Length: 73
Image 1 (spheres, rainbow, N blue to C red):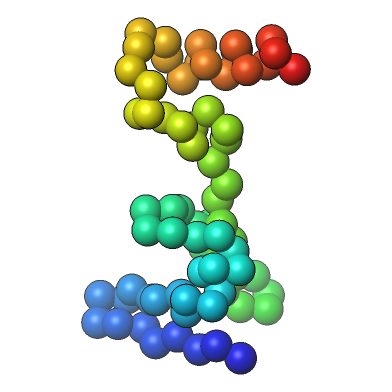
Image 2 (cartoon, one colour; image 1 turned 60 degrees about the vertical axis):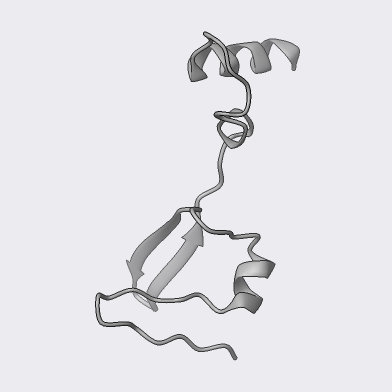
């Protein structure tokens, strides 16, 4: 079972093996919750359009892109 150590500023490094399994990379966000069983860390998944934010330059807002994506479906 992989283990982690809490650093001086309260930071924790998620072991590489678990980051790979969860498809986490630098800058990704996680949800941290307290449950009856203890601390639970879960990945926060990006929406399809949010994942591509900043790649295409233009005048469409994130809401506009979401609307266009919904129209395709």
